[in-house]
Image (cartoon, rainbow, N blue to C red; front, side, top):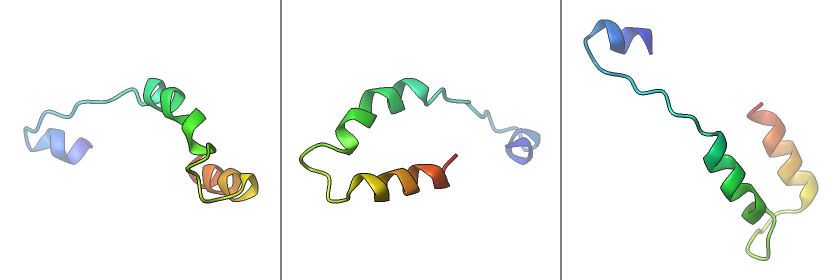
Length: 47
């Protein structure tokens, strides 16, 4: 991010928490094609 700012590019920091909160209930709904264990393991990667 710092490199882009040094180049004169405006970098907008986005608060992703509201989006995550809104979509997480759908992650394990009827449309999901993974089990809870797989989902939990994938979530652990991003944290």
